Amino acid sequence: MVTPRMVRVRLAGRDLARFASSGHIVRLLFPPSGLAAPEWPKPGKNGRPVWPEEGKRPQSRVYTIRDVDVAAGTMDIDFVVHGAHGVAARWAVDAPIGDVIGVLGPTGLGLRQAEWYLLGGDETAIPAIARILAKIDPTAHATVFIEIEDAAERQALTHSDYVTVHWLERNGLPVGRTTLLVDAMKSVTLPDDRTKVVWIGAELETVRDLRVYFKKDLGLDRLELNASGYWRF
Image 1 (cartoon, rainbow, N blue to C red):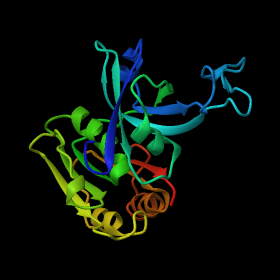
Image 2 (cartoon, rainbow, N blue to C red):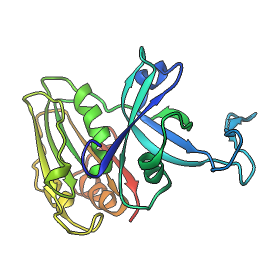
Image 3 (cartoon, one colour):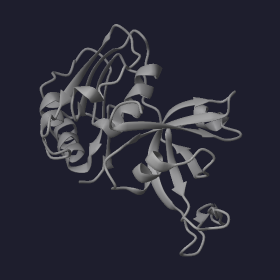
Protein backbone atom coordinates (compact mmCIF):
# COMPACT_ATOMS: atom_id res chain seq x y z
CA MET A 1 0.00 0.00 0.00
CA VAL A 2 1.56 3.29 -1.12
CA THR A 3 -1.24 5.21 0.63
CA PRO A 4 -4.53 4.05 2.20
CA ARG A 5 -6.21 4.26 -1.23
CA MET A 6 -3.41 3.28 -3.61
CA VAL A 7 -1.74 -0.09 -3.99
CA ARG A 8 1.42 -0.79 -5.99
CA VAL A 9 1.63 -4.14 -7.76
CA ARG A 10 4.97 -5.41 -9.04
CA LEU A 11 4.74 -7.45 -12.22
CA ALA A 12 7.54 -9.70 -13.45
CA GLY A 13 8.18 -10.61 -17.07
CA ARG A 14 10.74 -11.02 -19.81
CA ASP A 15 11.99 -8.53 -22.42
CA LEU A 16 10.76 -5.36 -20.71
CA ALA A 17 13.19 -3.00 -22.44
CA ARG A 18 10.53 -1.55 -24.74
CA PHE A 19 8.45 -0.47 -21.74
CA ALA A 20 11.34 1.64 -20.49
CA SER A 21 12.33 3.19 -23.80
CA SER A 22 9.06 4.27 -25.43
CA GLY A 23 5.66 5.28 -24.10
CA HIS A 24 4.27 4.90 -20.61
CA ILE A 25 0.69 3.74 -21.22
CA VAL A 26 -0.16 0.02 -21.16
CA ARG A 27 -3.33 -2.00 -21.48
CA LEU A 28 -3.59 -4.64 -18.76
CA LEU A 29 -5.47 -7.84 -19.62
CA PHE A 30 -7.32 -9.71 -16.86
CA PRO A 31 -8.35 -13.26 -17.85
CA PRO A 32 -11.73 -14.62 -16.72
CA SER A 33 -11.55 -16.81 -13.64
CA GLY A 34 -11.86 -20.55 -14.04
CA LEU A 35 -9.83 -20.96 -17.25
CA ALA A 36 -7.29 -23.79 -17.27
CA ALA A 37 -4.89 -21.42 -19.03
CA PRO A 38 -5.27 -17.73 -20.00
CA GLU A 39 -5.92 -16.95 -23.66
CA TRP A 40 -4.47 -13.75 -25.12
CA PRO A 41 -5.14 -11.69 -28.25
CA LYS A 42 -2.99 -12.55 -31.26
CA PRO A 43 -1.77 -10.35 -34.12
CA GLY A 44 -4.19 -10.28 -37.05
CA LYS A 45 -3.37 -9.87 -40.72
CA ASN A 46 -4.10 -6.14 -40.60
CA GLY A 47 -1.97 -5.65 -37.50
CA ARG A 48 -4.95 -5.32 -35.17
CA PRO A 49 -5.34 -7.86 -32.36
CA VAL A 50 -7.65 -10.84 -32.77
CA TRP A 51 -9.31 -11.51 -29.43
CA PRO A 52 -10.34 -14.88 -27.94
CA GLU A 53 -13.99 -15.89 -28.14
CA GLU A 54 -16.56 -14.65 -25.65
CA GLY A 55 -16.10 -16.28 -22.25
CA LYS A 56 -12.35 -16.58 -22.74
CA ARG A 57 -11.66 -12.98 -23.67
CA PRO A 58 -9.78 -11.06 -20.99
CA GLN A 59 -11.10 -7.74 -19.74
CA SER A 60 -8.78 -4.82 -20.36
CA ARG A 61 -8.02 -1.55 -18.57
CA VAL A 62 -5.54 1.20 -19.41
CA TYR A 63 -2.89 2.17 -16.85
CA THR A 64 0.32 4.17 -16.56
CA ILE A 65 3.60 2.44 -15.78
CA ARG A 66 4.98 3.76 -12.49
CA ASP A 67 8.44 2.27 -12.89
CA VAL A 68 10.35 -0.32 -14.91
CA ASP A 69 13.53 -2.17 -13.94
CA VAL A 70 14.70 -3.87 -17.12
CA ALA A 71 17.62 -5.67 -15.49
CA ALA A 72 15.41 -7.12 -12.75
CA GLY A 73 12.56 -7.82 -15.18
CA THR A 74 9.96 -5.97 -13.14
CA MET A 75 7.27 -3.35 -13.80
CA ASP A 76 5.37 -1.43 -11.13
CA ILE A 77 1.75 -0.33 -11.64
CA ASP A 78 -0.16 1.80 -9.12
CA PHE A 79 -3.90 1.15 -8.70
CA VAL A 80 -6.37 3.51 -7.02
CA VAL A 81 -8.45 1.40 -4.63
CA HIS A 82 -12.11 2.41 -4.70
CA GLY A 83 -14.12 -0.28 -2.99
CA ALA A 84 -15.53 -3.23 -4.91
CA HIS A 85 -15.86 -1.30 -8.16
CA GLY A 86 -13.64 -1.97 -11.15
CA VAL A 87 -12.03 -5.09 -12.56
CA ALA A 88 -8.50 -3.77 -12.11
CA ALA A 89 -8.94 -2.39 -8.59
CA ARG A 90 -10.48 -5.65 -7.34
CA TRP A 91 -7.65 -7.65 -8.90
CA ALA A 92 -4.95 -5.39 -7.48
CA VAL A 93 -6.22 -5.82 -3.91
CA ASP A 94 -6.72 -9.59 -4.06
CA ALA A 95 -4.11 -10.83 -6.58
CA PRO A 96 -1.99 -13.68 -5.18
CA ILE A 97 1.73 -13.91 -5.86
CA GLY A 98 2.20 -15.75 -9.15
CA ASP A 99 -1.09 -14.66 -10.70
CA VAL A 100 -0.81 -14.01 -14.45
CA ILE A 101 -2.10 -11.05 -16.47
CA GLY A 102 -1.28 -9.78 -19.94
CA VAL A 103 0.20 -6.44 -20.96
CA LEU A 104 -0.25 -4.70 -24.32
CA GLY A 105 1.79 -1.67 -25.30
CA PRO A 106 3.43 0.59 -24.56
CA THR A 107 1.79 3.59 -26.19
CA GLY A 108 1.72 7.30 -25.48
CA LEU A 109 4.12 9.91 -26.74
CA GLY A 110 6.28 11.72 -24.25
CA LEU A 111 5.87 15.43 -23.63
CA ARG A 112 8.11 17.78 -25.55
CA GLN A 113 10.83 19.48 -23.56
CA ALA A 114 9.88 22.98 -22.45
CA GLU A 115 11.05 25.69 -20.08
CA TRP A 116 7.80 25.82 -18.11
CA TYR A 117 5.13 23.24 -17.24
CA LEU A 118 1.68 23.23 -15.69
CA LEU A 119 0.61 19.72 -14.66
CA GLY A 120 -2.75 18.78 -13.17
CA GLY A 121 -4.58 15.59 -12.29
CA ASP A 122 -6.30 13.49 -9.66
CA GLU A 123 -5.14 10.27 -7.96
CA THR A 124 -5.24 8.33 -11.22
CA ALA A 125 -2.70 10.71 -12.75
CA ILE A 126 -0.06 10.52 -10.00
CA PRO A 127 2.01 7.79 -11.75
CA ALA A 128 2.07 9.79 -14.98
CA ILE A 129 2.93 13.02 -13.19
CA ALA A 130 5.74 11.26 -11.35
CA ARG A 131 7.20 10.00 -14.63
CA ILE A 132 6.93 13.44 -16.23
CA LEU A 133 8.74 15.09 -13.34
CA ALA A 134 11.50 12.51 -13.61
CA LYS A 135 12.02 13.18 -17.32
CA ILE A 136 11.76 16.95 -17.73
CA ASP A 137 14.88 19.09 -17.85
CA PRO A 138 16.10 19.73 -14.28
CA THR A 139 16.25 23.47 -15.02
CA ALA A 140 12.61 23.62 -16.16
CA HIS A 141 10.03 25.26 -13.92
CA ALA A 142 6.80 23.38 -13.15
CA THR A 143 3.65 24.01 -11.15
CA VAL A 144 1.74 20.86 -10.24
CA PHE A 145 -1.80 20.44 -8.88
CA ILE A 146 -2.95 17.01 -7.70
CA GLU A 147 -6.47 16.43 -6.36
CA ILE A 148 -6.66 13.74 -3.67
CA GLU A 149 -9.14 12.51 -1.08
CA ASP A 150 -7.29 13.78 2.00
CA ALA A 151 -3.82 14.41 3.45
CA ALA A 152 -3.17 10.67 3.87
CA GLU A 153 -3.05 10.32 0.07
CA ARG A 154 -0.03 12.58 -0.38
CA GLN A 155 3.00 10.88 -1.88
CA ALA A 156 6.69 11.77 -1.98
CA LEU A 157 7.49 12.78 -5.57
CA THR A 158 11.04 13.22 -6.82
CA HIS A 159 11.59 16.55 -8.56
CA SER A 160 13.95 19.50 -8.85
CA ASP A 161 13.91 22.67 -6.76
CA TYR A 162 12.15 24.44 -9.66
CA VAL A 163 9.01 22.33 -9.21
CA THR A 164 6.17 23.22 -6.82
CA VAL A 165 3.55 20.58 -5.99
CA HIS A 166 0.15 21.59 -4.57
CA TRP A 167 -2.12 18.90 -3.09
CA LEU A 168 -5.85 19.68 -3.41
CA GLU A 169 -7.77 17.73 -0.76
CA ARG A 170 -11.46 16.91 -1.29
CA ASN A 171 -12.00 15.96 2.37
CA GLY A 172 -15.32 14.25 1.70
CA LEU A 173 -16.40 16.08 -1.43
CA PRO A 174 -17.47 13.70 -4.24
CA VAL A 175 -14.63 12.54 -6.46
CA GLY A 176 -15.04 13.67 -10.06
CA ARG A 177 -17.59 16.29 -9.09
CA THR A 178 -15.55 19.12 -7.58
CA THR A 179 -14.01 22.19 -9.20
CA LEU A 180 -10.82 22.03 -7.13
CA LEU A 181 -8.56 21.09 -10.03
CA VAL A 182 -10.30 23.31 -12.57
CA ASP A 183 -10.18 26.36 -10.32
CA ALA A 184 -6.54 25.80 -9.40
CA MET A 185 -5.29 25.37 -12.96
CA LYS A 186 -7.31 28.32 -14.26
CA SER A 187 -5.81 30.54 -11.56
CA VAL A 188 -2.30 30.20 -13.03
CA THR A 189 -0.99 32.86 -15.40
CA LEU A 190 0.89 31.25 -18.29
CA PRO A 191 4.21 32.83 -19.30
CA ASP A 192 4.57 34.52 -22.68
CA ASP A 193 8.36 34.56 -22.77
CA ARG A 194 9.12 30.84 -22.37
CA THR A 195 8.23 27.59 -24.11
CA LYS A 196 5.43 25.93 -22.16
CA VAL A 197 3.43 22.73 -21.82
CA VAL A 198 0.12 22.16 -20.01
CA TRP A 199 -0.66 18.53 -19.12
CA ILE A 200 -3.95 17.27 -17.63
CA GLY A 201 -5.12 13.78 -16.59
CA ALA A 202 -8.37 13.44 -14.65
CA GLU A 203 -12.12 12.68 -14.87
CA LEU A 204 -13.47 13.19 -18.39
CA GLU A 205 -15.73 16.21 -17.76
CA THR A 206 -13.02 17.95 -15.75
CA VAL A 207 -10.59 17.45 -18.61
CA ARG A 208 -13.10 18.72 -21.17
CA ASP A 209 -13.62 21.91 -19.18
CA LEU A 210 -9.89 22.55 -18.92
CA ARG A 211 -9.23 21.63 -22.56
CA VAL A 212 -11.73 24.23 -23.74
CA TYR A 213 -10.19 26.83 -21.46
CA PHE A 214 -6.57 26.28 -22.48
CA LYS A 215 -7.23 25.61 -26.16
CA LYS A 216 -10.02 28.02 -27.06
CA ASP A 217 -9.73 30.71 -24.41
CA LEU A 218 -5.93 30.86 -24.12
CA GLY A 219 -5.06 29.60 -27.60
CA LEU A 220 -2.62 26.79 -26.77
CA ASP A 221 -1.71 24.56 -29.71
CA ARG A 222 -1.45 20.76 -29.80
CA LEU A 223 2.23 20.83 -28.82
CA GLU A 224 1.49 22.98 -25.80
CA LEU A 225 -1.58 21.12 -24.49
CA ASN A 226 -1.90 17.43 -23.58
CA ALA A 227 -5.27 16.65 -21.96
CA SER A 228 -6.56 13.09 -21.38
CA GLY A 229 -9.72 11.81 -19.70
CA TYR A 230 -8.41 9.06 -17.41
CA TRP A 231 -11.85 7.90 -16.26
CA ARG A 232 -15.55 8.74 -16.48
CA PHE A 233 -17.82 9.53 -13.54
